Image (cartoon, rainbow, N blue to C red; front, side):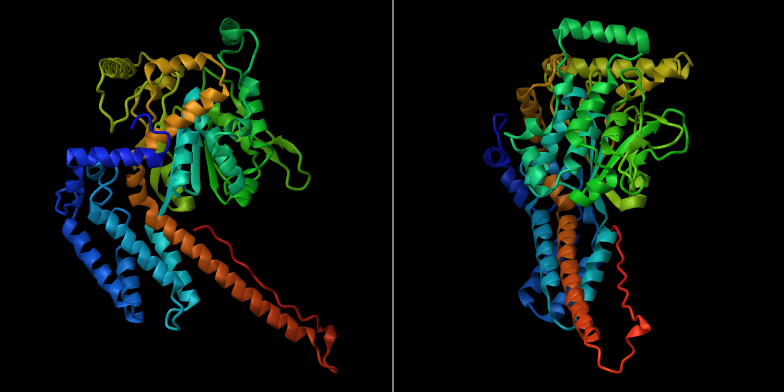
Length: 513
């Protein structure tokens, strides 16, 4: 299984292992204390009965039943304990419930009965999405291994499970930006093994002098400026990869909502969650660079914006507010994302950084080396907490508190397996081979969580797809009606006063669910 190159290959091997271990029998069972199996069983039987009926009455009943139970964790089906036994999924009854529910959603969307008109179906799916909530993919941390985030996103994309809302922090901000500024064709090229390195411009990291020259430059930079790394390198690489595109332009190009987390050094009341609503004209590469500016590693940077009238790029604020990374924050702006985009489900991809060697809370240390690393990290964190309580930790050093905390909380936390030996790559400039290595690491980390992601998100994405199709039909109908009206008013009879300047104003209303 570790040698698998694709999810299909991994899944075939995982099924065989499950059969050898008897997990296929567990999947076929129904009863469990980890979820309300009676509720799920009864609802599934009812939905199957309505499916076999096929009348308009059954469609109305299905709409009522789905509306009443459109909860992501209905009956505890998203309980983490249900996904610890089988490698390929969970109990078959839960998977069947999701599939039958999706079948009914398709039936409702395609229903052309006069009792369930187009407007009623649009309202139904709009209300369902608001009730169900939305999913956000959070890409956090990584340094050189932040390239693993691309593998995570690639694996979700190939299975049709990549959320439209992507949040980036630290190096994850650059990866999130690279994903969200692409249209579908560009996204496929980004995830293509042959074209990934061409989409990511890493030439700025290739400095002369080798490892020794790199170490000397870092020491001199730290002595002069108080930081080890050159933020101009990150800015140059991000600008070449992303281009001078703004948050609003990225949203209209890709349809995905890019969010980048930053922090104001001046502690001013400025947005720390940048997106097409809070900072529409900010250029993405400057926001991504600001999110990378970890104190002690990089200098703070200035955010830039594109003038809507002239297209010129200039500081976002006249006072040139300096921004730095939000990497050291211990949480996600959950409430802000919920307010703006109705997000209630978080898939967190967290990659260890230079100094942060972490064991995911869902994983257990098995080898002697991993156990020693975990012991060292726990002991270091404990001593740090003691010194902080005694007031012996300077304020500036508290920035490193993030290294001693558990990974960011998420409904699903994905942490690529980075071995201790892999950390020697951080002193080397990224190469195309290293890019593909990291992407493969990211892909493999998602495969064992794929069914868990699907159970939590499949109905949400189905609702979004069907609502988009219904809105397209609605727009097409309005276009036909508008053409008919224009033809009528265009053929004015003689004697009618044409100077009345009669105008038909068509108001459009756009909103983000």
